[in-house]
Image (cartoon, rainbow, N blue to C red; front, side):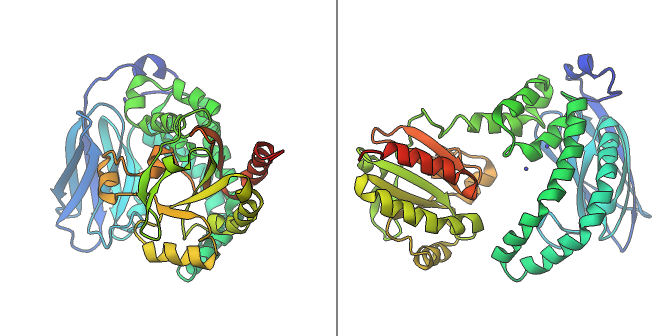
Length: 385
């Protein structure tokens, strides 16, 4: 938050429709301290992930396996943490044919990969981004320091990253527009699924062949399906749970009133910044039939949730937790109690307006970006009341 072997970008069209299984070999050279084993993880020819390992002898290692096309794989040595930023793990594109890797202990992020067309094209895209990353390196070092001290200050500091991300997006979109329907295009698009307009995202997705839609493009397809949930014109999911005071809560009890569902979290700076505005709206429209229900993403930090409600003085309306189950989420299992999933929430804050009949009539995403739109709809709804 973007498989099939690409021999050349010119003749991709007919080749993409195939699903031919191919053999890959990975030859590697390792430099560093003693490392008995090195590990490779990749989606295999049957779609299931393969966790493979091989011994490192005299600084050399090798793997062999089957693929249905390009695959996004990870290579790791002795990990120091379970964090994706661990210096001894990195991701790359593995394809049928031969791939060579040169890697150094504690510098897997800088490993040199020579493989098929996907990796080659990715290397070229990254090379275009290198000067931008170099220019912004001091900014990120400062951000790392701030983030260790204060999460909110770090989020505020991140607002200065907009020009950086805009420059990166320009490079990615140039590749995407020039190479529609490729595996790398699907990979790059994954980074823009939440922010891209639906019609534009759908247009890019429609150009992906079936094989890529089932693999790298699946996240894009899932995002397009998510955007059909919890949108104006659909029935609001009438969830039942327990509120912040331990009392039963059922959204169905609010039939006959307008309800603004506020999806937020104690750690979300835009959410917290928006609470004074919500208090103003509540004071203005409560007596006219508006209720607000906060749905918090703090299932794992209930005390932080309670403190935020108290500190921001928003206990004047109802508050519930979303009902997230991390184990089910990691396993990809459906959780019927996850309120956010039932409303297709992918960004915080998001506000959903439900009418007295239980139909969704408004959806507002992204901090104060949609405040004017929300204010205008509420003013229209309650005009004359």
